[in-house]
Length: 185
Image (cartoon, rainbow, N blue to C red; front, side, top):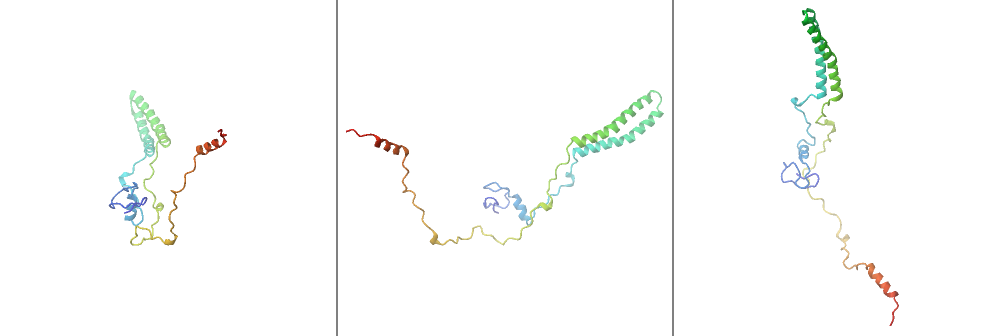
């Protein structure tokens, strides 16, 4: 197998990364193994987790519905309880009514507003995959086709070593200064 980025031939077809540039080759192996289509990721059945938001809404609903069962039962016990026991059942009746009918919807509201929702899906829809390529020729050569340029178009490289270096600025200035001085003999 050859690297898709740098063209380096790999020692075996089981390598996961290119030995030269580090390009991940595992996706290319999957693509070749499945006829040009990437396999679709199917999550396991036990892998689906309930989000904290959904769990909080469920808890609030259970508390709210528990109130419909708990409050009438405590009301019946309050009517049949003698003396001080009746006062205790009245206290628990009021407390359970407040906790269930106010606390349940409040728990649902807090879960819906403040808690995190479900995580994003880990697999991509099948329609976003690249369509299958038509079948390639049996064997593709690694070298490009031979050059078609005739030999008469070839010219030797120009000789650049014979070019004289440009004169320095200080040499030119020195020559000008020497000319301007009058010679006294």
